[in-house]
Length: 437
Image (cartoon, rainbow, N blue to C red):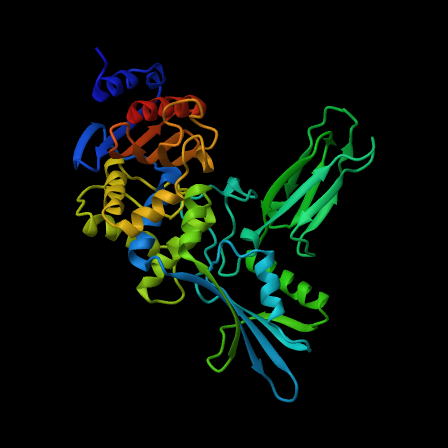
């Protein structure tokens, strides 16, 4: 006789991986409005990047699907023929070199007295509480500011050249804001590991290449501070077009300045990048814009988590202990239960607009995003739409299932205290296979 879903899940929870780790699990049939299975669903866990599901849902409910994140350029005439330019940002996490080129195209030729960076949208706290200081200088932990170019990061690609010679280096975006110290060699087979590192502990933007480069290698690194990177690159690109900038400074945009450019980033684009590719900056930008509903400037980092907390307590009517510290799940201080995440998934499913955006933004097992390489040979391929999460000792997965009976299920899996993330993910894939059947 075939096992029931409960029997299969009971068996899976007896796996040997739980000799030194634990898990929470909850499954709900959204069509029948029925709880199908639960195991330690009220246990507080660190959600890792599954936190982004809560952030995205609250952002869509509070801000609406037509909301935009804007980067604007203003001009103000000075006495004589002089003028000042103001660029004002709102933490657009996807603002790239093409956007910068469009912005520059809106600037008429002629000398600029002062190029001002308006970073008044948010506070100066560039990391969330509970973020690990030693996760820098990598791209997944950028220095957040209202003005972000390419996520505040530079991509460095090293390609080996002739034996004994320094490898060839290509950087994007190019800027004098950072310095490349190429101390590496090519094809020496000396055994010295090839590394690309930034002198981040001293706040330096010197990027050093050391060791023996035998194969091409690319890394993406954050730069400090990101607003200075943005304004430096902007000044350099203006100079390339023959537009001289006398000086740069920081200031709020005056009320009598004239807007000449606006880049409006659709919230749906940000949500998709946050969920599909687990982009931390996108999630934190959404969290800041949730916080902007306090209508206090600058937006403080804590405002967004406070509104997400209020949504869980009052909109979901949940009276339980939990803690929300950031929007991305990077923080060690986030604690949610599997049941809380499930209630967010259920609430999203009740709104056709929100559900469509979130489900289409989630990775699909064996097909896209952070689930592309998982479940490629199982019945779960193409039928699990879920957000992954992982930090040291944590592996989480939450989203929706296209079940074999035609129903849509919501599920949350929270593996905790597991140092073998690979085994935890394999176990989760087996759970997903059971859910699809």
